[in-house]
Image (cartoon, rainbow, N blue to C red; front, side, top):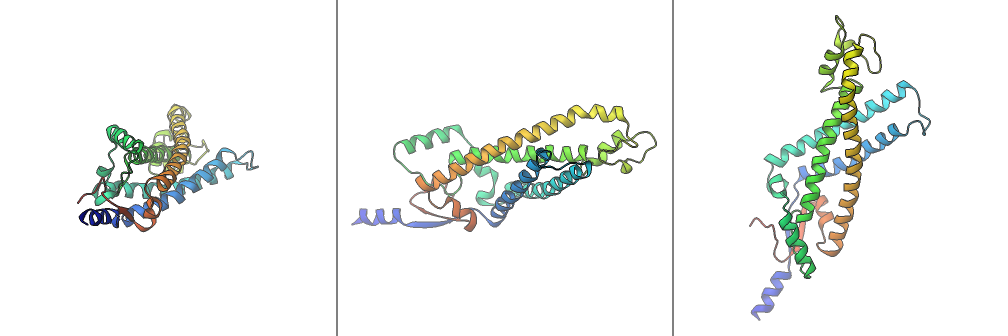
Length: 249
């Protein structure tokens, strides 16, 4: 009788709070903004094939990309701060990936066990850290390009003061216009500008791959191991039966 009662308790679904509202808002706003940035970015890359030409159109596309990028940056910075000062599973300290944990997790799965996690499982932690790192790199290099390309903040002031010719007001410098520009100084910046652009572009390509793998991984985990992972990013809660490997109780 006692064993039956214990099994019943172990199999009961218990609701756990996992993702608070700031985390959920960041996640879905981030999805929308990254999608928009990639869409505009692809138009910028293939504007000739799309029949878009002219300097004005080129600048407008870059300005649109940058404005969306500002929203992306603000959203990401808020999440980074919340990852330090927030509570529970919002904190980055709960997402420290360990290879030993991944090895143990995979071993338990291979034995037919099904360990349950309130937060991210050990593989998911690596995915989150990789994606967040890439987002920071993309944000930083994107802001650098905005500052050197179309002279947008936060780097515009430093850039225009550097490339402005003698006795020229840096605020009069315009994108893709060499009027009042010291061409030698502008040329000296080109390698760094190109490097930032390359890092930005290839980081986005890598992010696309990681997002695809992330979606596949989440769907597989939802179907095979732990139902409720996807719905938790909407509700903030997971319903789990049995012992949780990362319970803070």
